[in-house]
Length: 221
Figure 1 (cartoon, helix red, strand yellow):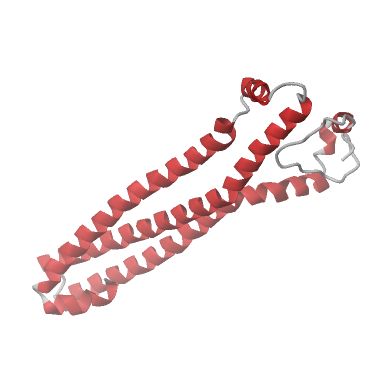
Figure 2 (cartoon, one colour; figure 1 turned 120 degrees about the vertical axis):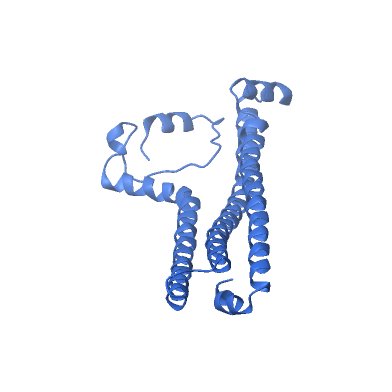
């Protein structure tokens, strides 16, 4: 908060700061040693953790769905063992196909749930950032108008654009990147959902012909 460069700039009445300003109340200047002690690093990490929320939520989702899938796969393997014990060490072709399909279904469902969670996180992030994108662009225009009060609005926008500060770079591009990621995940999600439907259909065809097998795997569907 004692940065001589910032204080110098703020001495001008035309000073406008746009974007998110973070001030570390440490009484230090602009040199690097003003950012390296425990106090400053703690403040910086606090801000960075806000950006890590998206990644952390996805990691939690991955652990949750992975654990659920592992647990279900273990149940399928136990069922396989019990079937082989009952059959004298072998499986019928129907049992083999049903168990393989159940394993594939479990993995696909886990992947599908993971994709759904990530899409929801992206939508949440988009909603949180959308207003900030617009605000940053508005602040940039205010800063340009304050500095160039004797020139026209179009001239201000042209000057900003020369410095790659424009609505496209500050609003459109970030929004397009987020939307593209969401569309990509939705496409993958649709493919996985179609695969799940095919696997379920395959399992149903098998168990429709074998009611004993249907009762054995019913709780795992």
